[in-house]
Length: 228
Image (tube, rainbow, N blue to C red; front, side, top):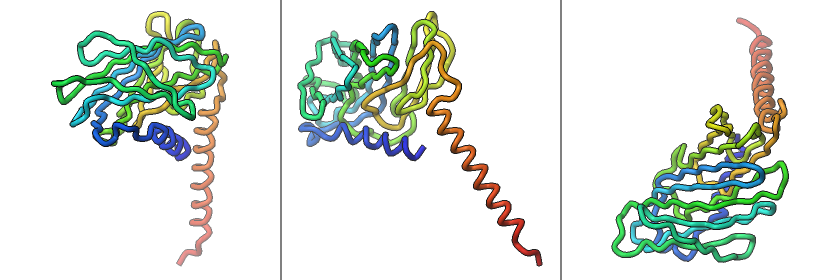
């Protein structure tokens, strides 16, 4: 768990403040929805933000090998969807912004949609177009998500959050997750039959075994103490 928290912190720092930091707003919530089928995914993001004094929402995306992002479109509140242009920077990062116009409400909803083609085989990597504003309040569940896997595929070895199976929705298996920060990516392995002992399950098992061992050592030490 500690390792995951550290990695989440690194991912959060990857979206460091950009030029709009002097006039930044705040992020209230983020939702992620993905449908994956035959090496292709459709992504839909929904952000609730408070603009404060900002006149545009800065966005960032990290490029990952084996994942090709295409056709990014963004909608502000109930407006029409518009193409989103992201400029490439060093380190595989792309940046852009969504103008809010004037006047605009204090609370704004952003909806972002795009397609991803995966060429990495079994490992699926879904980059997240992230709002580069700090959260209004640090809390569990700031960023929630749902992943649908079409066909008989199963997900395992997920990062940065565990994907929890929620049954079948139509022709797809449904998984959900929850995070206290915005991730740069949602990644997992897919297979027709997930192995019984995955990396995540191995870590959980090691934690349980170490806890049992520690408790046994404490008990032996207590029993070894002389009685009055």
